[in-house]
Length: 213
Ligand code: AMP
Image 1 (cartoon, rainbow, N blue to C red):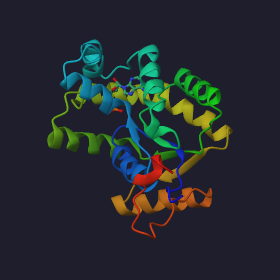
Image 2: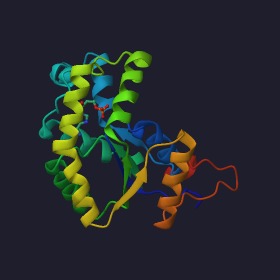
Image 3: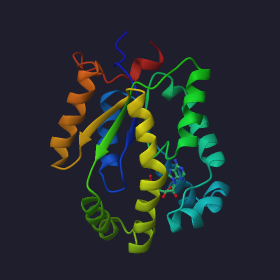
C-alpha cells in the first residue's frame, strides 16, 4: 500500500489571503482533492448550468449562496470516491450552519476533520491582493464595492467559525504574510506538529494506485 497519507482538512481565511493557492499545494501533497466551492460555482456559471443560473447574481453581488444549495453541493462532492480518504475544502464552511452540516455529514460516515488551516492576513493586505487579482483575472466579484461586501460577510459570518474550530482544538493559526514559499513552509510545519505529514514519495509513486490499494 503506497497511497500517501491523506487528511481531512479545511483552509479558512479572508478573500485575498492566498488560501486558494496554498490549498492546492497542500491538497496535492496529501494526494487529496482540493474542493473550492467558489470554483465549483464559477464553473457552473461559465458552463451555463441550471445551478450556475441560480447563483450568478448572488455571487456577482458578493453575497452568500443559500446554505441549502451549498451544503448539498458539498455533500455530493465529498461522497465521490476521490474524497474517501481525504480532502481539502476551500471556501466551505463559511458560516456556523455550514460548520454543523459538515460535522453531521462526516459524523454519519464515521469521519472527522483532522485540522483547520487558518490563514491570517490583515485586512488592508487582503484588500490590496484582491485589487491586484481584479486586474490580473478580471473576476466580476472583485470590484471595490463587492470586495467590501465580501470582506464584511467574512468578518460577520465566517470569522466566528474559527472560534468553534479553536474550541475543538482543530485550528492551526498560520501567519499568511510573506512569500508564497514562506507561507507554504509554515503550513506544512504546523501540520507536521499535528502529526499530519504526507508520505515521502520514495518510489516515485504519485498515489495513482490509491484507488486500487
Ligand atoms: P470564493 O471563490 O470562495 O471567494 O467564492 C466566491 C463566491 O461564491 C462567494 O462570494 C459566494 O457568493 C459563493 N460561495 C462560495 N462558497 C460559499 C459557501 N460556502 N457558502 C455560500 N456561498 C459561497
